[in-house]
Image 1 (cartoon, rainbow, N blue to C red):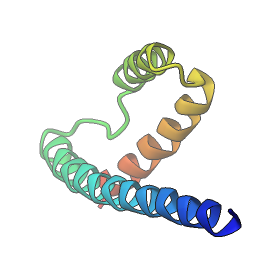
Image 2: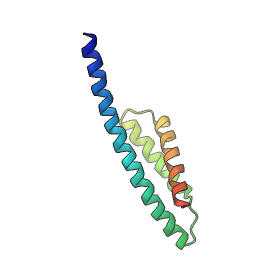
Image 3: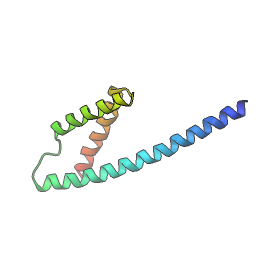
Image 4: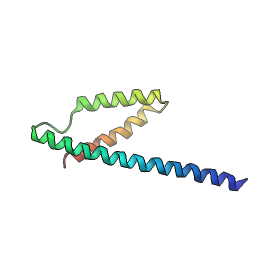
Length: 92
């Protein structure tokens, strides 16, 4: 019985590993787009931070998190870091 449990855990961990790989690839894509946005903002003399957009994004994400039965505050913290990293990518 112990072997079956460890096999099941290994299988589930493999699925998590696959999801993590997808998350990383999506983050890479997001940051590449953020770099492009940063270039466009610099060409137009616009500030890199758009707090109105950021606040709207947090609101949207938290609403979606609630619908998915996720902790909206925890999800907001994850997105806060993603947005901070995106701003850093925009800085070039």
